[in-house]
Length: 118
Image 1 (cartoon, rainbow, N blue to C red):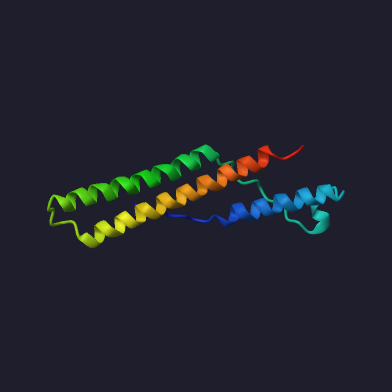
Image 2 (cartoon, rainbow, N blue to C red):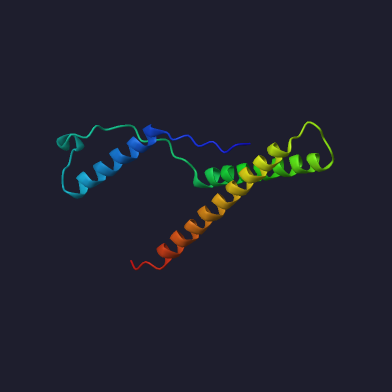
């Protein structure tokens, strides 16, 4: 299973609008329309744990698929190509390494936040 990533620009634009509105409030501008901002509906909330679980599940699925293909090839299944096995293995490896790097960044950010002085 390939990891597909779709960027929803409406969510990014909504976040930018929220940041601009917060900056306007911080500068004392009471109404965002005074600085030419267009007020948009807030993007629906995304649960971080669900997104993280989905990403981990995709990594797990790709590893299981690669393992099954490798076993089928080793058993002599003619419907499985060596090139398909190698590609699936590399995809699984890349997705796993990506998840490790994301984990490292999250741990680093957590440590940075915990050492901040309030």
